[in-house]
Length: 137
Image 1 (spheres, rainbow, N blue to C red):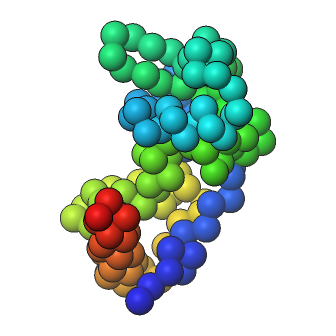
Image 2: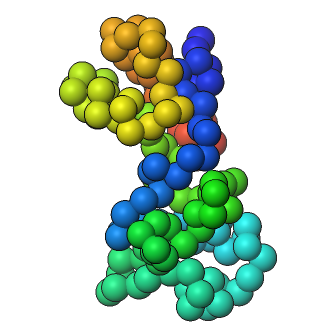
């Protein structure tokens, strides 16, 4: 069994929080964020979210996610897509994607090389998928 910390340790550098758009939130993401912030959902939507039709995203300020301030200020309440990054399944089938993500994310421990990283990531993702299935019953 492999541990995520063997291949990745978030440094809260914010490289993944940069840009003029952010990830889309699921209903569960919104619930988690509201609970984390201890604010009414309407206040969270007004202050922190950009809603276009049915697409809900976090606002951006100064070219980065509104919740970035020398690190993620909602780290334990952030959307699942943020928690997934940078250990994205696309790295399993595309070494170029692995290299691009490794170069942009200082938390990736790529010194072990792609082949070993791929083996460990596949096992970790499989473990997470199994845990998610068990949690859902």
